[in-house]
Amino acid sequence: MYRENRLVERIPPEVLLSAYIEGVFPMSENGEIFWFSPKMRGIIPLDERFHIPKGLKRALKKRPFEIRYDTAFREVMEGCSERKETWIDPVIMDSYGELFERGFAHSVECWDEEGLQGGLYGVRIDRVFFGESMFSRKTDASKIALVRLVEWLRDEGVILLDTQWMTDHLKTFGGYEVPADIYKGMLAEAIDVRE
Image 1 (tube, one colour):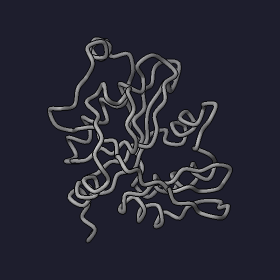
Image 2 (cartoon, rainbow, N blue to C red):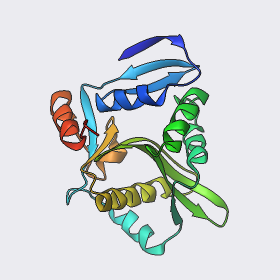
Image 3 (cartoon, helix red, strand yellow):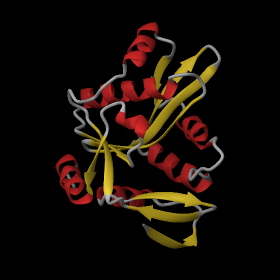
Image 4 (cartoon, rainbow, N blue to C red):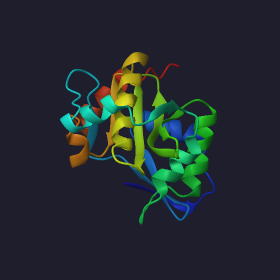
């Protein structure tokens, strides 16, 4: 963990993008920025190793949500921040909002007749997507958003889906961990820094 020793109003887009290219990402607490580069990195496979649990396959067949992309980015971030403890404060929201305006941050959203029910957001650079956070207001909404994200990333030629840390929930989708040195090699393959 790296620590920024000052309060900030936002993280400049250039700083965020440079950090991601190096495998570092921020979290915030009351405007104080903490930078992380875990020793073990969570990855969701985008090939045949990606697994959809049986119960979720049944839910997908019912099509409970309309899937939209990049139509409610701020609202998705707000949904992700609606928990007892969150690192998504106004500094993070404003910083990623600027990345969204520049075309680097994206959201996948699950809608029904009652509104936004879940989704996720993250950052895309070249052929890597850095998943930041997800939320659900209705059953399976974030899981369905993840499945649709994987489909979109495959269509886009993305080869790396970085989840930062691994959780038991992500393991049900085939998620796994790699050591930092292996991750750095995967990241270098997925990002053309000459762009």
